[in-house]
Image (cartoon, rainbow, N blue to C red; front, side, top):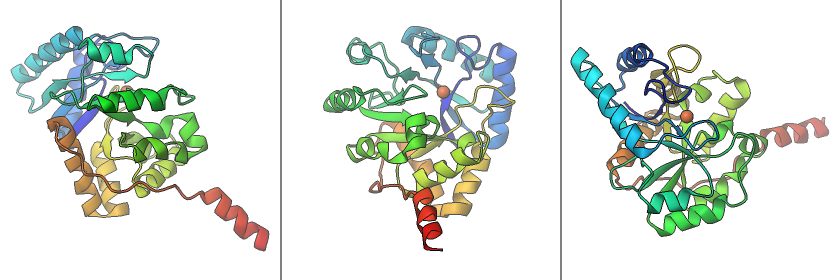
Amino acid sequence: MIDLHCHMLPGIDDGARTLDDSLAMAELAVAEGITHILVTPHHKNGSYENVKNLVEKKTAELQEEFDKRGFALKLFPGQEVRINGELLADVENDDILFADLDNQYLLIEFPTLSIPHYAESLFFQLQQRGITPVIVHPERNQAVIADPNVLLPFIERGALAQLTASSYVGIFGKEIAELSSRLIEANLVHIIASDAHNTRGRSFHMREAFDKLDGEFGIGKMLDFQQNAKDMINGDVVQTEAPMAVLNRKKKFGFFKKRK
Ligand code: FE
């Protein structure tokens, strides 16, 4: 498996604090069957700034530690970039790490509570430059939780989205797990990644998530998601299915109630 979102580099964000933490995470990842990890420390999220050079250096150092210990895990440097007004300039100055070496897929985080009004125009400008924005964990954004269909225009215009494995398997509660299923069903998310921060509350859960995906949507969907992650990190075209509006289950329930 390929994991495209992971806070595994030691001591630079709220993920692994020490090398021992990173090694413990690596052991878990390997045990789950993860072979490649894009390390994605927070960048410009209000608490952490992890510039490209630092991430590249730290990734190479951690890879060396893994190699020394014979861990069969290949790391790639990345960033989880919080959407911000400097993003376009940073991209143009080559200060941003993408999911792939061709600088096509950019992991972008929305703030927890909202989707900024300038997101659509920023995405448009990125896409004009051949960059595909990949919205990370939309299922944990309050605006998406309130109305999942706020995602639809972004995906219709070619953005992609990353669902977090732990969300899907219920670590953040039933509501987020249910929303995750609805987003998969409506083709509003395209890859599953761990967003692992540690080996305890915020672990990988990738094997569990792919097993659930297989059980809920079939092996074809599971293989599609795994292929999408591969295509993304290789800088190849990610094949997507047409996004749809999410059915509002609550309203549907209300409808039946009224008819009683
Ligand atoms: Fe993250």
